[in-house]
Length: 361
Image (cartoon, rainbow, N blue to C red; front, top):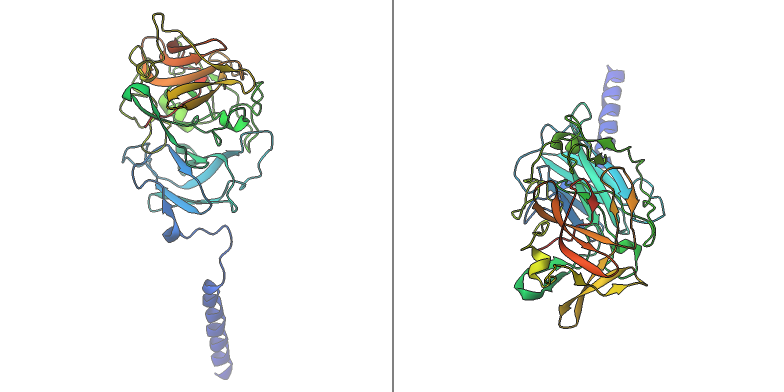
């Protein structure tokens, strides 16, 4: 009997010791949901800006809707990149990520490091249900454009610097109507993809199975080449991006892809003429153009190049800039194309092309 009591007492003491461990300092990677800052207080989105180290959260919903992405079994950081030649180690930007009660929680590195990452939610079979771009940068500034057309960011979507001549000003590239980004170059003057934690998959050609929104969601890092149409989508659909923000819009809360076409944002801002081709002040040293906004303020547009739509290749980095609008029409969509001598504020191009995005307020 005495032995039984001693064993029971020992068990109580061991249990008490284990319970006391809850009061010990937390591991650096441990996430406490109650301490997380909500990134979706104003609006949900496919992209969230983080400007300081800490713990953050957002609802696992589709873009700016309230529709949950499905039965989430796990969450994972798909890739991280600084945007240049250095290969990050896993956790250099996002140290840990968890899913709890319809929300995704993640913890950044400390000290804070600028870069880009994508977090994916998966079902029990490992299929990606949805993914979100975490843009780790100082808060972008709003720049008012002429003729009361509105405001745009001071940098490209995914850029971690607005500075002229800096590789980190290039930002990321997007196929029209897709919410997920592709890496740009690690140089401002030649097309060599920036390093990341991911070995990016080979591009696929659009067909009835790969050229679908469902495939693009399940495979956010796969570039989809055009096939029978000038689009990665196998069937025509211009509703993926619109003037009213859609669930596939890649911009963060309170921002969206700008309008395009003959009455688009850049045309109404004054980038127009009789032929709708205008001279731009090309900066040969910094490889871009500074567009005048009035009052001595300029908007810097780096010539970030693009991805070909019929093969997976980055090109024209440093020699031209291509900026998507939200306006699709016919067999393609409108964009602004910039070269050494001119800009076409409502050019028309293949929706399978990977271009820069400049978000408007």
